Length: 128
Image 1: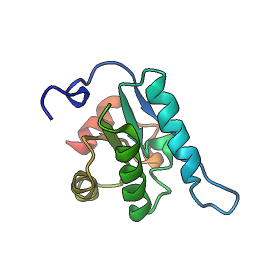
Image 2: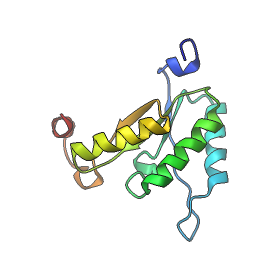
Image 3: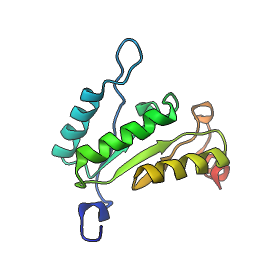
């Protein structure tokens, strides 16, 4: 997609929340509204399932569904990334490959919530 906005990785990339109803179901219309709102307000990329987007709580099929929806809603205006929060490197790689097949332009590797007290150097060393 040379020459499109997908080539420009500068500016604010917004890690959006995943809205749930009281039964724990994703509110897809609210998710779409969030995407449109952030893109219209100048977001240069959308991150699905970042830490506050419930990456640790979503099932794989839910993540893939959210990516599919986000890709459709942004209409190639901005890149769609996805958060990856796993406990070991093999799981990170496996999930990243599935997400790439689902169409994300990139991933945001996050430390598992159980190691959030680690230093930046410890987190980088863990994934290296």
